[in-house]
Length: 376
Image 1 (cartoon, rainbow, N blue to C red):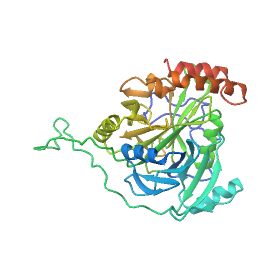
Image 2: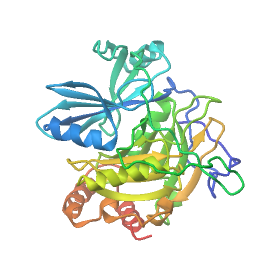
Image 3: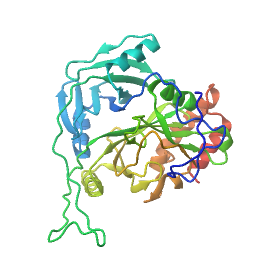
Image 4: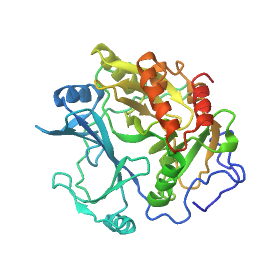
């Protein structure tokens, strides 16, 4: 990482970078990915998995004895691949390159070979492992699935801006129809090393940095990272990385059409016995309206709408990492979402002890900073 950028002109955060802060991008990345493609999971109970997926708003593109391909309504490809396995686990993420030449360039850079994907998906892939141990697949040239009928955003009246007359607003209480995969959030014990890996190799850009309270001098501990599409706007974050005591999946987010779809879809999930983790609210970093749910295996998944879009001219914001700073409005972040509830405490304690014994970026001062997050 060699490039530094000074100043803060875009105004999406109250604080910009200071001299010597971690750069938001790499000067000469190997390639520049253009989007996140899909997530991969292993689960033993595909019937239960598909039932939740339908209630959450996915469409089943492929259903076999040993796997599921789940998609949204947007044209493209399945955004979640589930294969039958002996235990439940997150199995990695795929990012879409600009073309097959980029996949080959990346493979050559890592001294490995690209391979053809199964015919049901099509295209070329190179399989990598990031520094935190997460499988990362970079892909291009897949078959394009046609757009499906989605939920149309509602027309709203805003004071004198009248767009709806002689018609009532009656959003149905049905599953929100997922449009697409928006982003993935993961935790890493080697946060900075892992962040630099994505910036240097996949050409991604940081939209916002967070730092532990009272530890700005030690640099960031979370970053919201977007794709560099030049002057074409991209999601505020496609990937978010956070420093923590374990390398693990935190949550993934899927876009729906509007607030009514998100809220009515949440009511549908609640009525069918699923557990809301946190919501409804509006985030600060990314600005999206959010609603978080637990799937039957405990994975955290998010409905979102109205997120920020940045082109590559936007410079990074800097802010303290606090529980109260995660949302502009909405209920306080829950213990379930923050991982401070009783069912998570024992597992978290073991992770912290293990991390402090190993050589990584999660030291005792970082532990104290992380403990402050939940109460600040």
